[in-house]
Amino acid sequence: MESKAIETLLEKYLEAETTVREEERLRAYFTSGDVAPHLQQYAPMFTFFSVAKEECYSGKVNIKPGRKKVYSWVAIAASIVIMLGVALDQNNNINEFGTYEDPELAMQKTKEALEMVSRYMNTGTEDLGYLQEFNSTKNKIVKNP
Image 1 (cartoon, one colour):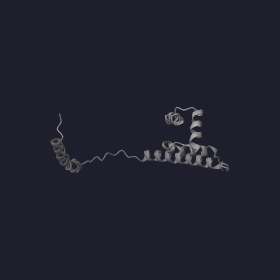
Image 2 (tube, rainbow, N blue to C red):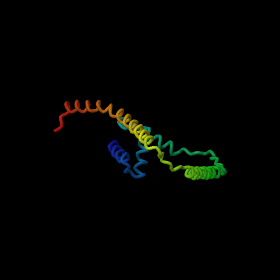
Image 3 (spheres, one colour):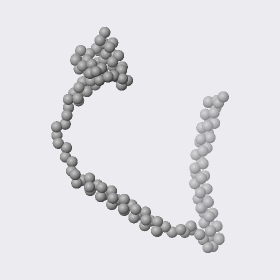
Image 4 (cartoon, rainbow, N blue to C red):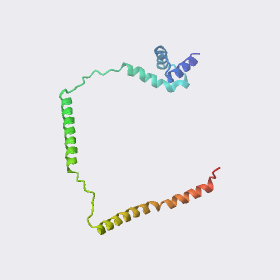
């Protein structure tokens, strides 16, 4: 009879619906050593909780108060360096768009740029042949309604 009650409490425990008193009852049952064989898998968990409850740290924690000040100064210095870098970079920007005085030279450079773009576009579309072959084979196997 107690096994059924423990199973019910265990279900409630796993659903996080138990009270503190019910959890104490489960802990007492699983640490008693007289656990039903089909519930043995839960015994180490409750044993661990009982042991962990008794543990406490008795050592001393060393906190150095001066380190926090050093970190804050480093953060301030880093932000100042970043702001100076951004400000100096904005002053060095030149607004030259690559204009050409000679129209023939401009036409030649434009053609070179467009040929380069075309070459890269064509290398990207070569692999699409494989994709089209895959789609046609897929369509033969899987018929769409």
